[in-house]
Length: 178
Image (tube, rainbow, N blue to C red; front, side, top):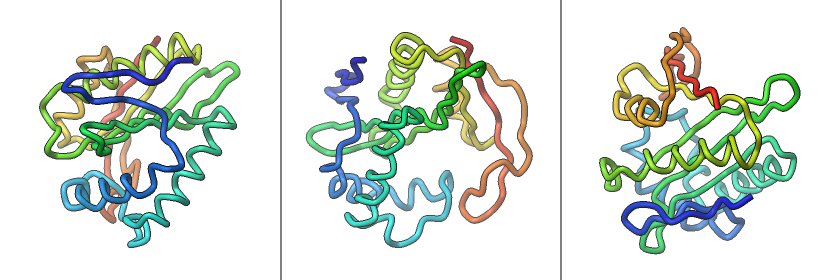
């Protein structure tokens, strides 16, 4: 299954690698304030190379088990975001969760919209999945637009779904039948 793709503005979408720890720690540290309203509270170690080594090890173990597909977005030699299919369930469900983020300076360039389109193709054609789901905070309209441009449909509101920025937050639920 081919995952590496060149996207808009010379951005490369590729599998996460063990050697991404330092550049990923740098990317998270640079985007820390920007991402804070959209992410769980992270321990200080998360923003270090050692913290990312541990997180990458976990992601790559999930990749080997077939329960996740962790990808990074690279532009001009720097990581500018992540996109992941996680919680892959086989059997009668054939479903995965979609998660993603992109650095503030790369917003509004169509990169994430294109990335999600590629992930839909990979999920359908490469992994044989039936359904993808994603959740956004109600106020995260740009993320909702990315999903809608890629054929995701809003199907409900999950109350106090995920702990974000230290509080249990409602999320708008989206799905795409492949």
